[in-house]
Length: 228
Image (cartoon, rainbow, N blue to C red; front, side):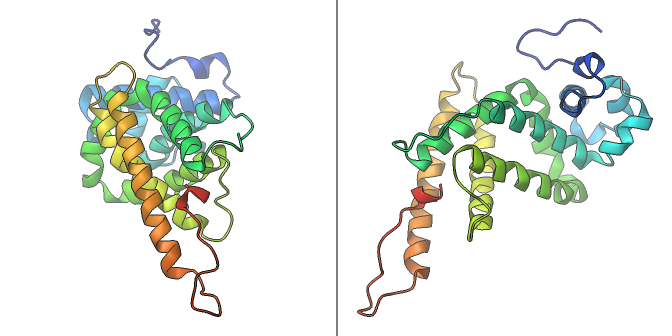
């Protein structure tokens, strides 16, 4: 297999270490997104992905039972890239700023797959079964992005944070796919606006739902920045 340019995903990572699940995901993600960019996601089959990735079907089927599992591999590759750069949370930095940094690192990790992802976003609505099956994997990814930002999605209300971040990601993804700037400046602006909007909505929701004190006053204010 010929070498790929430095800004493209490597296709042969699985061959270098066939026992490593992360390498397996990288190989499958590169093959699937390459095929999607070439012929459209709706025309990509699991057999072709396995052959292009150079993975025996006997091994492939254990981890990738359907097309949603292939999309989950792309998501896991991006997650692993972000989590590999995990650092201690800076207490002087707002949760929103930390989350902005985490999500921009995730979008940067998705850049090698952008051509294929354009096809996925275009074709996936026509495959509702795969879209629904992918929802759980996507939710897990968003939960780990929250953890990477020092936000605990396992506490009470965490499901709302995961759903909110998923909405932010989906909105910004459409900007990212057409962002031709070298530094993803359009994506950064869209992400900043989306996170600020989520923060405002969260603050309003908290005011509506927080129990009131004996004088009818809320016992304190809490910005959505405590979560996002």
